[in-house]
Length: 346
Image: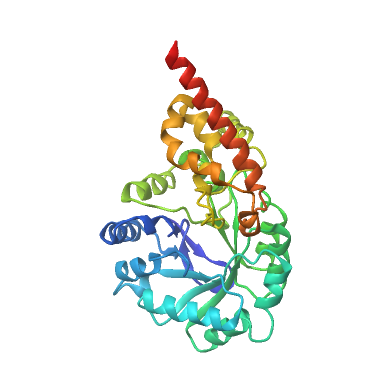
């Protein structure tokens, strides 16, 4: 494992971090085991958020007595000062610590969010005061909007930027990466697997390892998953023509519009299981339609409940036309069901 400075924070972090969303689906003992295994293998950077259910609590349990050995990053999605302070105090309690190494304003992707967060009494002012009090050491920001991310980095107010980056979502490769480097702002890579749509760790990290100035934070849900990714870092990184062809295959399969499974659209007020249903086209392509309809039946049947109310569109950070995509996937699912039915009659 190699270590490097995270921008102007002065924090030394491992070259790959740990994104802590997946541990919310683990029992506490298994989550602690996975976190400790990553630490024992040299991972020192752990990224979570107040919104990630019991993720912070599990991190607190895993690293009790090891606080000075790791770097903890967490987040608030609140724009108002009172809400941000409530989140911060809750994070400190759950993480069993009296300071956060990196506290991030989460998903600031439009002008209105930034206006509220940066106004008098807003989240930024309160978090800045918390930094003066020693509760926060450094302030970062996350976004899914390239134009907003560029603007936010240019303010000089943040020590880090967290943004999606992988071989499918390459928008940050040039302008944002170069700006962050020029301003010595640490670049944290969210969604290294494109929200789970890239199911090949080797190809995902062959691409990412070309950019050692960027810190990827893959999510891990087992010690074996940790070992799979970290094992790649012990190898010389060579991208072959076959690798490039495979990347192109993924790009063609997913197209320009695809769900990253961030789940910001959930819950649906009408009971649609949006996130898995949005991935049906890819599931059917990888499993074959005959297998996919059985695998996906429970969540695809909920797609029929969509009344196109638009609530999911308001929440989606990628501005996806979710009802239209759900309709398309449901029609595909129905056609696959019909084909299977007819084949069974033969």
